[in-house]
Image (cartoon, rainbow, N blue to C red; front, side, top):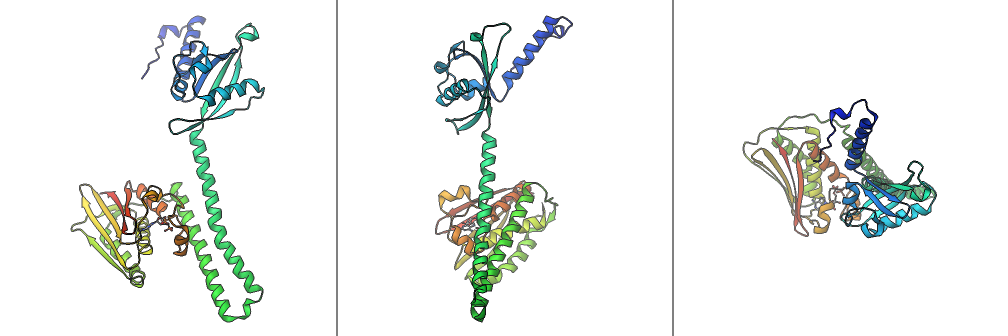
Length: 362
Ligand code: ADP
């Protein structure tokens, strides 16, 4: 790390010494800034670029008063500077920089006139503020709102459609009435599930759902969860098995949240399997406990695996909805496991089945 040395005698009463200190401080600030700073003259010669600018825009050689276009190869930067020079407004310009990962900057040019210097010698200071992360977060928020609206609009449109048909006369036919009310009820349930999942996720993300860690008997928890799924599994021709290692110690965990994780994984395993097996393994290794939920179901295409824990990401939206899914289950599961300092991952083969595994520190 670079050190900026200021001698204590400089911080003395003389004006020159104190100016020297100020200059050194300023140099340190500009050098260490995580934003690009450059200085150009009226003839578009680059007089100075701070280390961040040099690194981000891969300057070819040192500034040393060279023409901008000889040192900066990124056309977007040159064009933005040209636009700022022409425009009289102080409006920041947006620049998209290609290259590693693609970054976004907001750039501003500020005129800087030395004492009594003629206008032709005016310098301009350019500030390049990295807004990549802000843009990323903005895009996530936008997608999320669009997804939520879409997910709510679909069942709502169905409820409205069936209710209107009933009001238009179908009400008199008892069989149709029952049929339509059943459908309305199903859609209303879907909306309730979605809103509950959204609330859970938002509370987990904003850390408003405190976890209370207590020594937890994982074997007892799994056995009681399994009982609740027996009928559902039997109806789909699924054998539900547990394989729990000997001497599994109690683990520090939030019982309700961990129950939610296992219920979600087992529910998915059953949902996405027909006539097969769903097996839950519990194993202890060194200082971790690993739990696997394995199924012989439809599996997940390789290209979808990296995104499967994202909110609303589903391999087959239609199928997930039909099965009563919200597309938020795995996002919730991931948050809870991370809240336990654990890890979660999935291995899957299309048409053969999936294994969702998580490990928790003992
Ligand atoms: P959903 O409510 O749609 O089940 P999840 O977040 O629980 O939402 O899961 C996201 C997606 O991951 C599902 O829509 C499905 O495509 C896939 N998925 C999850 N678990 C399994 C599994 N055991 N087998 C196959 N696909 C699965």
